[in-house]
Length: 68
Image: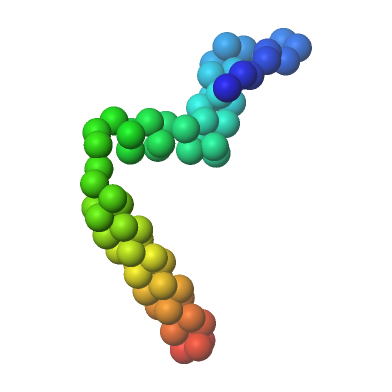
């Protein structure tokens, strides 16, 4: 990951841009996930739970829009 300094850009802004870029590409999230070994069944279980939560969130959102 590389971030080049712009003209008259402070080091604080440069660091903020770097952090935003890392979050966007999900590098930090991946590092934390790979920190410890996970069994394939555990990964599948987490993905399934994540997809169910996403579906439920969309369903609740749709219900709220229909009530209005």
